[in-house]
Image (cartoon, rainbow, N blue to C red; front, side, top):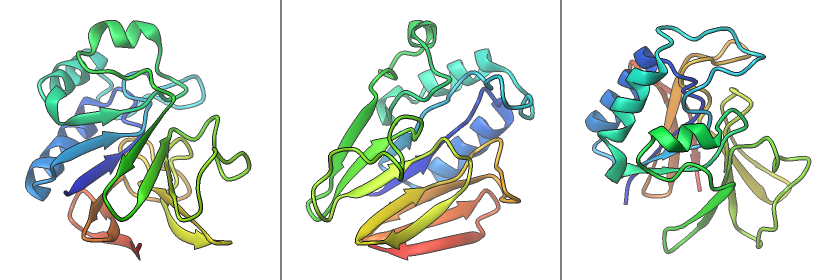
Length: 180
């Protein structure tokens, strides 16, 4: 199965459209959203083409493709307008070889890891900083931010296919890869 990971859309209709175009061109089976879908949050400037109602319509049209978890900017009112579950604090994906623990990253993060088994892979968003790294026997994956990247990064998403986690820009540029 081919997964596309994205995080931190923050209500940007422009980048939501780009994300869905990438999902289609990548021919991924599932779109895994790591939280912060509609609201930009009090610490962020408005993203390009901030239009949460447009984002709602675009995501609801793809509800059968989406797996998501709750980010720190997602709330019960967001669940009232989205037609797929968004309020889970975490999710697990098991691909037969690996177990991926999905978290937004505001509760569980490198300094406060969730209860994982040896060999599990931690996938998160929240920081708006991409990451694909093995460190101290653990694997950390962050696709970066779709709409408000930080630390000089470009807007990115990631593809997981055939044991490879590949972070890409919307122009198709491979930014980082990690073989799992």
